Image (tube, rainbow, N blue to C red; front, side):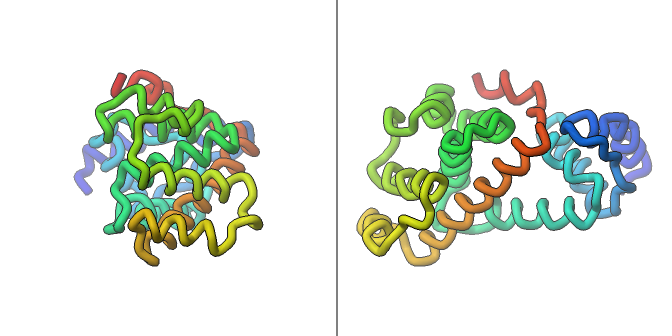
Length: 202
C-alpha cells in the first residue's frame, strides 16, 4: 500500500470503536490486509462503515466478519447483489435494527435506483413494487427472522416453484442468517450508522 494512503487511514483512526458503539473498546493495529480494506472502502464509499470500525478492536473478529460479508454479499451467486441487500433490509426490519436498516436501505436505493424501494422494504416489504419471485424470497427471509423453527418443506418448495435452485435457497438462508446475527450484535452494542448513509441515493 502507498505510504500516503496508509497515513490517511491512520489519521482516520481518530474514530475508534468506542465512538460508534456503546462499549469502551479501542481500535487494534490494523493488519496489512485490513488497512488495505479500509482504504478500498474509503475510496469507494468516501468513508469506512462503522460496522467495520466497531469490529476493529480485534483483527481476528474484523477479518472473520469481513470475509463472511464479502463471501455472502459480493461473491458469485444466483441471487443478485440487489436481492441480497433486499434480504438484509427485510430481516433487519423484522429485528428493528437501526444500523442495518440505515446502511442496507441505502444500498438498496443505490443498486435499484429507486429510493422508494429502500423505504418500502424497511417499513413493510409486502407493499414494495417487487417481482413475485422476490416476494417469495422475502417471505422466506422474514420467516427466518421471526420463526426459523417453523420453516418446513412447504416453504422450501415455494422457493423452488419460484425458480430458485438448491444453491440459491442455501444463499437466501445464509444471507438471512448473517443479518439475524448482525442485527443482534448491532443492537446489543448500540452501533451507530454512518451519517452519510441517510442521504445516499435519495
